[in-house]
Length: 250
Ligand SMILES: NC(=O)C1=CN([C@@H]2O[C@H](COP(=O)(O)OP(=O)(O)OC[C@H]3O[C@@H](n4cnc5c(N)ncnc54)[C@H](OP(=O)(O)O)[C@@H]3O)[C@@H](O)[C@H]2O)C=CC1
Ligand SMILES: O=C(O)C1=N[C@H](C(=O)O)C[C@H](O)C1
Figure 1: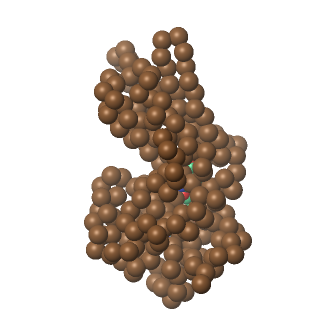
Figure 2: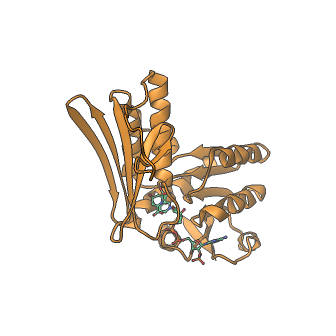
Figure 3: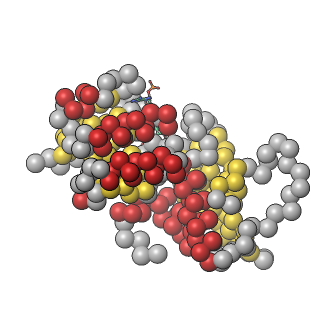
């Protein structure tokens, strides 16, 4: 029996790509495409078993909670999931055994690997900063990927007892040093022509390691979306990050 998939945010850049990917998958049936003002109940009317959310940060929590409350598995690429929202979703999932949710800040395999490599490497370098670069139509900054990468790096450095990156800045009235996420400076570039790109800069005495990933096309995210859909029902509860579904051995 093929899984029945509803795509929420189907009119968007990612949603449109997901519609094409699900339609092309032999083991999936696209049963609903929701846009901004479509009622979530139409997901139930269509008989969906799985929901893909690629909407906007303001709407994603409501969409996902609706899916979970109705026993549907959800694969989520939308940004905006704070630690508090994730915790609250975990609590909801504890009341709906068997339901799986994947929240993936980035579905591109190369990006997931780059973030994992960066976390691994970060304990060996004095300094680490992140530069994320995206198309100028993106509504949030820093990117979800950068926030997640910083979280992984912050945790790895804390576990290894690495001190904060050195920084003698005393005056920064305009915020030129960027945002600080889990102790890591994050710089956001918005530039026409870009899709989604990130560099993690790691510095030590006399050397630098740069880990860069580029998504040149949103097709790069689709294998991860399909992998998430195929796996999510076998992984009840909340998984944060596609790395949770991969055997990275890092
Ligand atoms: N995890 C990953 O690998 C990736 C994640 N993303 C993230 O995915 C999200 C979408 O990105 P992108 O496709 O570029 O953005 P878009 O703005 O192109 O698409 C978002 C779509 O969601 C629609 N929308 C808004 N509110 C609702 C709602 N309540 N219900 C259903 N649909 C709604 C919008 O409609 P309208 O046009 O009417 O406003 C729009 O069509 C972002 O958070 C982005 O950061 C992006 C790329 C990769
Ligand atoms: O808005 C985007 O385009 C992207 N959003 C996600 C993010 O914020 O990290 C994933 C990818 O970077 C593209």
